[in-house]
Length: 258
Ligand SMILES: NC(=O)c1ccc[n+]([C@@H]2O[C@H](COP(=O)([O-])OP(=O)(O)OC[C@H]3O[C@@H](n4cnc5c(N)ncnc54)[C@H](OP(=O)(O)O)[C@@H]3O)[C@@H](O)[C@H]2O)c1
Image (cartoon, rainbow, N blue to C red; front, side, top):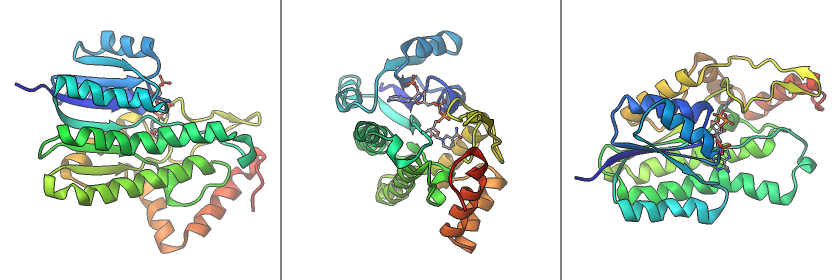
């Protein structure tokens, strides 16, 4: 009998760790937990379950990402859930990003997402689910968080398009679009000022809703009323108005705004 597995990237902390916790309740044979920090992944296995297979990989490096394809070839499991969650974000002006950092960020936030979908689909069956973690940052351009927001537009569009392509196979793809989530990704201080995150939610809430929406085959998952309103806002008014509100909000942290 083939093993029924879930693959979660960015599993060592934050939203990814929560995905591992909640997916364990669905009783897969194994969860392949991918991130760079081996120690944290081992701790997750000790803390939560022997079913967790820690896989220490840097997904911004093609060969390390592609080694998952080799593992799938060797083990030949059924992939029931793929959660493309690993991601990176940095606030700053365009010139704070060197070309090499831009390349690495896009590889992790965009290329690895699309590549892992393509690698895993041959091992999926009707009812398998892909959850790609985009963001409410994809609803409008976000100057000074520009690279991150733009990368999340890629994830949202790619996921929704792929969902259509996979309908004939009975596999769904959901673009998960959380607003601010209480994890280590959030910068607590900018230029010495404590940051307030409007509408912040817990990883548990995001993951619960994402798994529910994935099971329903939805192509987008929006967790809170606050983010639903943000999404509607850009449709009712304009992306430009939403961008200007963001610029105004970050003015107090020393970023130029309107
Ligand atoms: N927090 C938010 O407000 C928020 C809002 C919307 C969307 N999101 C998205 O949700 C996802 C998870 O974010 P989070 O808030 O949980 O962030 P986090 O706490 O910083 O966790 C990021 C995860 O990605 C892994 N990771 C980072 N670089 C990697 C690499 N090169 N290769 C493999 N794994 C890597 C990290 O593990 P290692 O360091 O061990 O590699 C970690 O497990 C991201 O895609 C993020 O963009 C977050």
